[in-house]
Length: 523
Image (cartoon, rainbow, N blue to C red; front, side, top):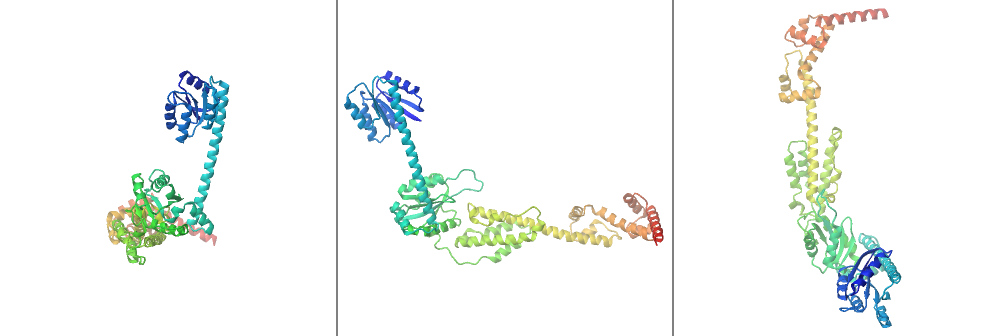
């Protein structure tokens, strides 16, 4: 695609040239027109023009002067000159200024088309070469950046490579800082990463010679001019409405120290979790941190002793105390990492006990293994608190289930032992020391039938055995299995067995007689 500017002080010539150009089989974007050199120069300054077709003789600024002015202003554009004069001196001057062709008026259609196509082919060739050179340049820069990144991360390289690479940016490597930028994004926060925006702002602050990008992922790492105030970049990021934490090393000298600087900037990055209020973390913020400590094991054990209780509020409070910033900010970041690992180990031990009782439910302990997977320490503590409260709920239900099983077993034993006595739900619930209503619901939920129905079935089961195996009178059997009256016993028996107690006894005796005769015959 090409933009063309037609310049002539005569309107009919401008219109004629424009009409011919539109008939050519070329991919044209726009055709601009100007009535003189001054107007043409304004258009060239405002728009991207690839080809100017201009008259030489014009009243305000002639074509040759226009060519000279654009050359002085370094406006890259090609020219075709048209003129009513055949004086060779004009052509010489035009060619000297870079004109691609010289056409005499009246301009013939085929001459104009041939000249424009020739210039268009040159423009396309130049554009292709330029794109190819840019691509080669970008690939070379990317290769250099990758080599620098690998060297920074500990890859071995020879002294010749170090000297050669250092000579490409000698002023920067004489005094630089490594800078790691961590964008502050909340969990599930929508929006794309601002890595390229942060890099662009860094180049504005330090200039192209004072900033080199060494790594884009997982965090942006730059080598920047140590002479610039460390607070300049955080301030520029804030002005650009980018919420980011900056970790910045001490000034370094020489490329040979890059791996050491990398170790230091990663350490500062980890410490940024201890100081979420600081936008720029420097080594001076970590120098006084204590490097000897003992984990608060007693407090950890006390915390987990609360697991399985209704004290969720106290659990939350204890976690906040263990991870209080005044405690964490006393020590090197390794203290916080060890504390997190200890919490995860305790969670695993407690989960292992109740895992068989959890069914498809489970804790997400894996999400707690790496503090630095989270945007900040606050988000990690929230995730830890959530998993601990879930464990507390699971453990509480497990303990209740275990305790309820013991209580129910004792209640059932008591019923089978005391069925022949006057017995009701209140007596059994008191025996196992449970609330009347709670025990009633618990009994029905776990046994599958209510207490009255269960007691009736126990008594009638005993009655059937007495009726079949003894000669006790029906009224005696009723008393022996806990019924206060003969009538209530026979009614309950009839409801369950669909027959009277006497009929059941007769049926069972006939059965025994048949079985006895069969046994004698077999002998």
